[in-house]
Length: 575
Image (cartoon, rainbow, N blue to C red):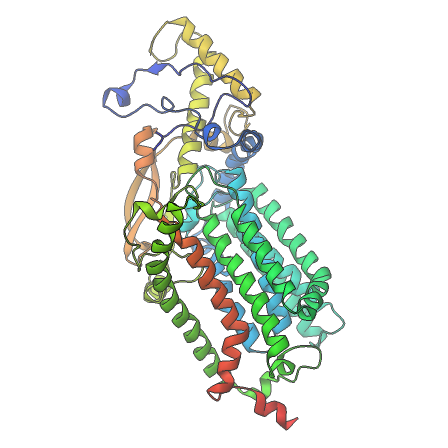
């Protein structure tokens, strides 16, 4: 494993900067590795040159906006808003949509449901694609405080915001559907739903900023991506649907092949980021929905009840009791599928993968352990951020019912990307301090004045690599300057509180900045949220499981409804 580094680098296309001077201070004497002295080129080594150059050009934006984000957060913070934005953030997550989307298909809103699947799958995939390609950190903490109910969110890169893309795409698509000529809602209902769509999107976007999880550029680009995806879906999806339903087998097979190729070319991240896992899950959902709706439309005698402008499905005639029974039965079938298929695949696939490896045909991804290096995959590991395991449901309920409703507040690096950025910013500031010091700087072991020239030269090289001075806030007084001074510093202090719950739903602590005191590099990495071990077979497992979930939702479960007496064919015969 490569040693931690600051991630700053000497600039694209330039030789490595001279080794950083050894600063003699109390932390070094105590045996804590001094920040910025080990492996200064993590991202330069981990990324292709064009991706490294892209990252170096975007990184100054993250640093520049951090003090302004901290000022915005500090100005708005209240306990009530903390809870509100932490809870409503769940309305932009993959889990929320995975639970809600099947209901649309079972309640007769098939066209709207399929449109949402398309825009959400594309949003999750392409925001994850860009996140892993650019490998940009979230805005620095401190000075920001991270308010979240999801520990896995901290492990992802920041740019662009998937929450914002999801929320805006859903809102834009809903508004476009409300303004179609086929809208049957009254003007008052239409206006109310449109207002709720705007409120939903704005609430998620502002919440991402308020919670310290994203910067202004993250949510702007994420929102633009979401809006663009919805516009493309609304105007061009009908032609895709016509092609799909008119094809014998070519269309669904082509769609599945294209999606699998996109999964394969998904960029390798520089750090252990779970974006790829979410992309694979929604790629499976897309394959399942396209294949399932194609089969149902062409080969099911129930298709006229649900499909097309003359569909005979009537939710009101179905009644709330039968609708609730369908919901319970359908959700139970989805969880049963996953509880059976996931462990079966995790038991079988490692043997197949080992055979493939012996033929030299394996396609390993970074951060995934190959089958030849493990014996068995744990079957009950919490490995899914899209749809929770059955065993996780009680914990999720407790987190909402508890005093803090699952909210946790933290300060300090939470992921490898956070840590590298913290150390890179600190190293940059140290170099500037050494380069501009007129003689009153810290004691340095080495060649005296020559150290300052080396530090200045390294800083200049970083400038040419677009690794600019942090935020660009002018030195001096004021809140922004205070927030900038906190960047790259801070010791995390734990304080017991009755208002915080850990990820497991038990009473925990609030974390706050006790003093402006830099953590050593080893300490920074020791405090991170540790990514779990991931296994190579999980990629195919996720793809198969989520393809099956989507297929069941749009095809298999509808047939099961009719078989167990929860169907709607009898309603159609009355008309």
